[in-house]
Amino acid sequence: MAINQTNWTKSSWKNFTALQQPSWPDQDSVENVLSNLSLLPPLVFAGEIRSLKQLLAKAVTGDAFLLQGGDCSENFSQVTAPNIRETLKILLQMSVVLTYAGEKPVIKVGRIAGQFAKPRSADTETKDGVTLHSYRGDMVNQAEFTEAARTPNPKFMLKGYNMAASTLNLLRAFTRGGFGSLQRVQAWNQEFVANSPMGRSYDRMAKQIDQAIRFMETIGISADAPQINQTQLFTSHEALLLQYEEALTRKDSITGDWYDCSAHMLWIGERTRQANGAHVEFLRGVHNPIGIKIGPTYELSDVKKLITTLNPENEAGRITIISRLGSKKIEKVLPPLLREIKREGFNVVWSCDPMHANTYTATSGHKTRNFNDILSEITCFFETHWSEGTVPGGVHFEMTGNNVTECTGGAHNIIDEELASNYLTSCDPRLNAEQSLEVAFQIADMIRS
Image (cartoon, rainbow, N blue to C red; front, side, top):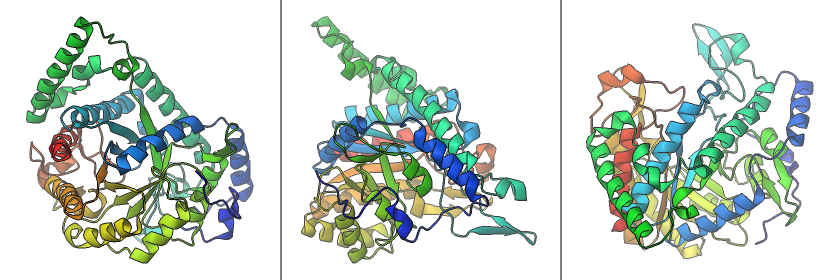
């Protein structure tokens, strides 16, 4: 399917206004890093990207469901085998709950192996009369409030590539080497979750899956089939640093099409989705699936222009609209958006991000989100789609497989005063494994409805 590549090159974005880009102090160093990046192997491959787009086309019609989740902003220091494994575990757990209890194929897309940069509301930050560059993620600078740490360093882009490559290497080994096998479904249940109400519900379901697999083996169906002993996980991140994305953009030798090979799926954020901006200009020419974050202050005309610019052929699987509206606003602001996109006949995956518009500062001073608000927005998302005759096609979470205390509520009812006990995020608060599993069971019930 043709992408709008009229007057497009992978560097044509430079003729447009590019927001949220670092102020690199040494341009010669930037060019040297970009030159090195452009020669390195792609992180993902065009064939994999095409496979994801085909799967997402099924989510447009409700024949599959998109589960997208992972860290708010990955930190280089947290790129370790245990952390990658725990993130994969909870994605696998949520996926098997949604597939088995929700009775629908699940497309697993991680916010992983590249989510190293983040947008900021201001270019600088001031503390005690000292003004420094804002922290823009480990691919740009460091979080410590010192001049040396906050000075943007282009070499961190090269380190980000290497970190992403290491993460992908381990993920491929896990998902292809037996760790992702349905025969290990009980082994994915983390120790701290196992004795919780959600963990016990999961364990009961896991035993049912084990029984089903044993039955299949008994009647002569091999459990060595790839559908059972392997799994498919795709990667995604916000396409924020355009110089990095350009350096990883390659022409496919088979089709001659351009693909951004830094991730399978890329999304454009609420702060950078201007139809006449550099991010949209760059993304309109690559053939990856594209997510568009839409907040409560959207303009319908802008959303329609974005969709037609990024997907002029109306290809199913190309565009995922990720609504981030807030539990208090979604009931009012989602219906007009659904009606207009439906009226226009646009083929899009509708996904709900219930995290970003539900953030508040707790009495303890920690930035947090309440589990009930998250669940409320998801429930309203589904119910609104049902009432409008449209398809709720996916969910988008910031979450971790670790036992953090960053979001309040959930089965163990974390309260404000308990947030400090294991508050580890350097960016936004994430659901822990138990909370993630709990929301997966709730979503499965809605999918099945």
